[in-house]
Every structure is written in C-alpha cells, then in structure tokens.
Picture 1 (cartoon, rainbow, N blue to C red):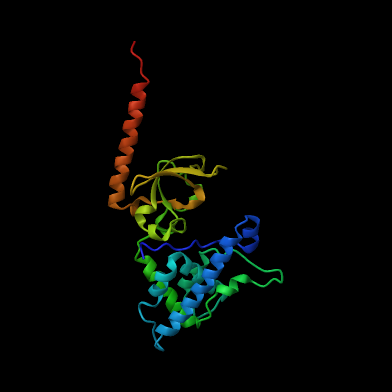
Picture 2: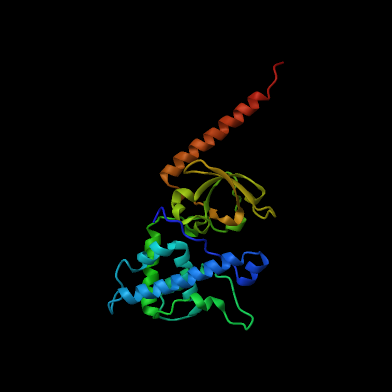
Length: 253
C-alpha cells in the first residue's frame, strides 16, 4: 500500500468546482466516493458472520481506496444518518470532525446521499471501529497532542503539527507531520497573512505552508525523543548561522 498512489479526495461542492473550473476533479472524486461506498457495503456483506465482522474487513477497503477516502465516505455516511442511536458516541463525534461540503442539486436534493453507505447501523459502526483502529496504528498526531486555542498561538520558533489531511497517503507518518516554524506572516496569531515557513524535523525539508494546513502547536509533553534531538540540532544550526552573519558584518577599528 505504501507504493500505491491514491486519487485526490475533492473537498468542494459541484457549484464550487464549477466556479473554480475543476469539474473533472469533482466528477472523478464523486465517482470514486460512490465506488468506495459500494466497496464498504460489499465488504460488510462478505465479512459479517451474523455477530462480528472479520478483522480484515475495513483494512481490505483501506488498501483499495486509502485512508483519506474511506474516512471521508464513512464520516459522510454517519452524518447522513443523523442521530442514529446504534452508532457509538465516539464514532458520532469522530464523524463530526470531518467536514463534508454541502452539495445540493437544482431541486434541493443532497448529492452527498449518493456516497452514504446503506449497511445496517450496527455493522457500519463496527466497520468504523475497525477503520479508526487501523488509522490509530499509524501513530499520527492530532489536536489532542496540541496546545489549546490554536488560533491564539504564535507558531514561530515552535514545533507545529501538519494536518494529516494535507499529506498524501504514502506520506502518512508522524515524521512528516512535525515542522519547526521559522517565520511567515501566518505564523503570528491574528495576522491576515497565511504563509508559514517551516523545516521538517524528519528530513530537513524547508517549504511554505498556509496556517490552516496545521493542526496546532505540539505540546512539549508529546514531542518524541527523535524530534527533540533533531530540534536541538536545527536550533544550534540557526544559532551558528546567526553568529556567523553577525561576525561577517563586523568591521575592525
């Protein structure tokens, strides 16, 4: 699965896609959403023995469609079913965290219903449990690992967590999530700017992101040892570069 390239999950409505001239992306993504829904229903039908789902039921669909699309279709399915009591509170809350853009046709019919799984709530709830367990094994960082009130936090000089939704499937590792923010208007709370410049703690890549691409500032208690060591190295390099710059600007009297 690590070498498989999965198609982009288009997040906007048909109307927005039309405005942005991205209708082909919308069509392709919707087609795959429906196919993923069908795969979920077929897997549940195949792997439910009347009491339990086989352990590899959800992983088999993830391997075909990827974590991003499966979570998108599952979250939409739970949201479309509203306050169905046979879904666990944890799964209801999980689904609410994933934004599914409103998308209605000219007659007011919700297009999102087209990729909502119609399996029984009890078996679908078990499938969601399996998905969440598989995703948890990736060890990804989330908002629970970050400082509260992200919108009030300054990012510069701090380790920030890149949202998993930004990463491609083959890059879904915690190493790819941790970045040292080095500046940019977007690094300051309340700024109208969006740009955040950062260096990846895993491989040292330097790039520009938008502030909205980050989940928040990582709490120090969740900083892994490997990241702590790498952070110290980067800070030392920056300090050395700063000292060299100051020395280069000195003049002899």
